[in-house]
Amino acid sequence: MAQAQRKHIPNEIRRALFDATDRRCTICRRPLDIEGGTHHIGEMGHIAPHSPDGPRREAVRPAEVDGLSNLMLLCPSCHRTIDKEPGLWPDDHLRAIKAEHEGWVVVERARPEPDKPLDEKPMGLGEIVEIGDVAYRIAGNPQEERSTDGRAIRSRAFALTPDGHHLWIRRIATRWPDSEALDLRVALAAEADLLAEALPGLPPPVAASMTAETATLVTAIPSFTTLAQFYGGRGRESEAVRVLAAGIAGLCEGLASLHARGLAHGSLDSDSIMTDRGGALFLRDVGDAFLHPVEPAEDVRRLAELIHVTVTGRPPVPLVSAAVLNPAVPERFAQALDRALVPDPAGRGDIVELSAGLRM
Image (cartoon, rainbow, N blue to C red; front, side, top):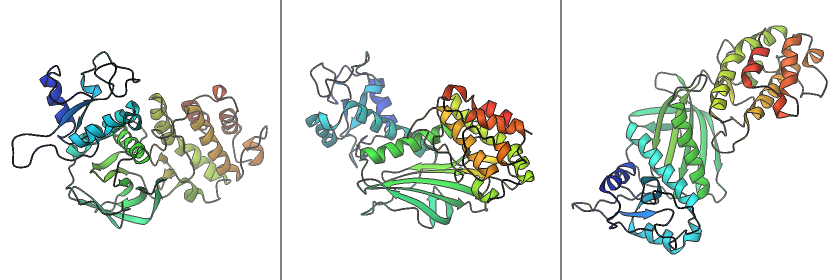
């Protein structure tokens, strides 16, 4: 790793790195400015080594080895730690840490949140989530999962704005950015970045924040009603089939936005698809698009499977049309499902074709 005093690193690169990291250590996030003084303790370290025989020498060295993308701003302790045991800090892990920290600096600047002291254990959502000067009230029981080593909690819950609008909140709480928690934080940061583009059919972001111990994303949803709750076993009725056909477009538009970026939801189920009072369907979030990538064709198959179960009351059976299992299902609708359910992903068509085939 290069020392902070390396003169061949241009001043503009130094300034850009300090700015991108908010003048904090990229790993432990401690402030690097000396309190009350005019100096700092920051050191610039290389991810791929500056010299061929340096730490992580097996990493591919970029043409601009002293470029911003290959540098991390570190405190002296973290700098020595990753260079003394480079096998424990491979280049891909360091690049993920860099991307996560610098990405959330951008989010934090957009909506700053006061620093809060670390608790002994990572905490879940509680009854109120505060971001900036806004308090969001949790509705119902949060879904909470601990990481393998117990040092991180992934929480998800419905919530309400102060004026009663419906929200979906995700939070990653951790005391230390181990690899599992890091992956979750990086995925949440990537989702926040994607949703900020306001792509068709994807839920609009409401708030996001990052502190050393938490990463939080709040998005708007049409209601707290899921696909499973809306149909509640009534999907075989002819009116329900018509409502489903009329309401599928927005959901497919959201999936098409993901697929156009080479992403896929990857975890569609009857609880991750929301509906408004009129039956229009929407994505609750982007699922596992940034955690467990799958091909878009898997979304096509899974959505067709969910619709088939909704309108027939049973899982798909090879060579048995939904129109046979439920006479209220039009033949064109059933044929669109049959195509999307074929074993060969190449033969399923895309999500736009499935949406068009389901129209009545």
